[in-house]
Length: 160
Image (cartoon, rainbow, N blue to C red; front, top):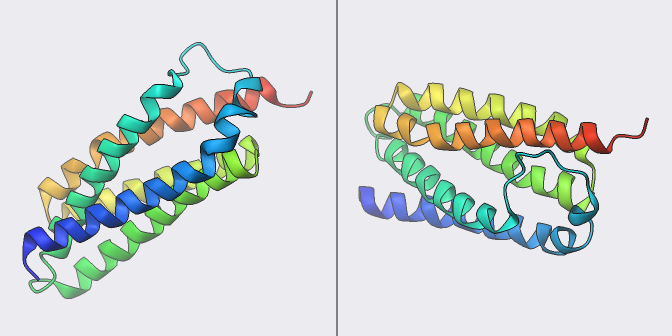
């Protein structure tokens, strides 16, 4: 498989995860989420879909670039792609915990782990492809912001 097909497979996989995550959030976004107290810096709901779509695309491109280096360093590439897969599954799990289970506290704990896994994935990607690693920076920044947002929502809505 050539580099562009690998990128296409990875982008399609990431978009599929994003689609599933979006499906999980649909009902709660319109019913439960509006009832929560949110911090002043909470973005409008319409912003999330385009941002996440772009992030899933660049995540897929990054993973495809790393996968393309498989023949030159099988061990490192395999480890990096396993790490990428774990963080992608954690990404999906966050939507389930926060929106489907409506549990901001559990989602808060999970998103901290997710952020650390993205950082570790970035670190592993950097040793294989600097371009792939750099493509993960916007994703890491957004999840960092989402972590602060999740913590704030939990704090504002905790039972005293």
